Length: 362
Image 1 (cartoon, rainbow, N blue to C red):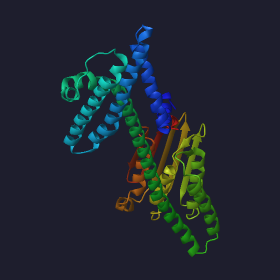
Image 2: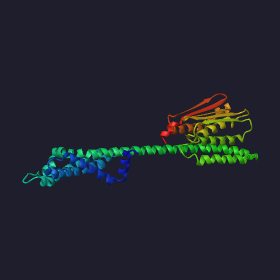
Image 3: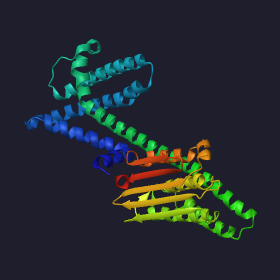
Image 4: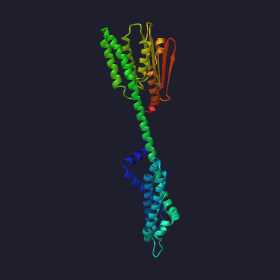
């Protein structure tokens, strides 16, 4: 946390204390710069500083908390400008009255002339030049700091809301992804149970491990790559239980360290490959080849599957791939490439991610 952020947080938590500290600082600053070298005039300088700071406080809070917020929100600006003019006039009148009938009798030796109330009320040029501008000059620093603080808080709140919105969208995308996978997997187990296959119980055990990972270990933004490798291996073993030797699956993986990656994206690609490479096969020997590499924070994932051209081209739902791209856009903006290559015989998806980019976001 920067010193500026610490000051903002302190002022938000201790507003009255912060305001007192600010005006004491302003008093010391102006008193030290406007004090004459004559010790006999020290009390006069002190009284003048107190006088001008008092009305500067009135002017600052009038402008900051009454006028400016309404100028930013109210549509009837004429009323606000009218209130600004009238308010400034009355503050200046009161300030001049206090000066003439309160301060001057203390610091001046009689006899001396005093302006009558009628002259104070009607001498607009003097009220504006000698009082309003003087009061405003001391108030402007407070107004500037308050506007800067309000802008910072508004910007920080907007960033927080944007982050929460992005996290919510990611959760929605994952919620769309997981039921899609579960639906297909449960259908596979259902097919095994119909024929009383002896591998049904083993399928359920593997599915239990997969669900444990999805439900309890994939809730964070990033998970270890090794966890995703294990998840893919479990998924492959579950799918291979359904098929005989005609299905060929090759999974190669190489990592130089256990980095972090967004969860379930790789599983989505694998699930998509099985759906089109094996699930819709009509007699040929389906093949799925998976290569995963992580070297120096450069992550590469390539998956290739044979396809049934007729069935694949008839497929109109692209929820899986669209979700993957949307998740990548939110988690790795401008730090990934995702390409798909379709031929008459196979479909290849290649994902590359610069994992070093997420270190700055952690």
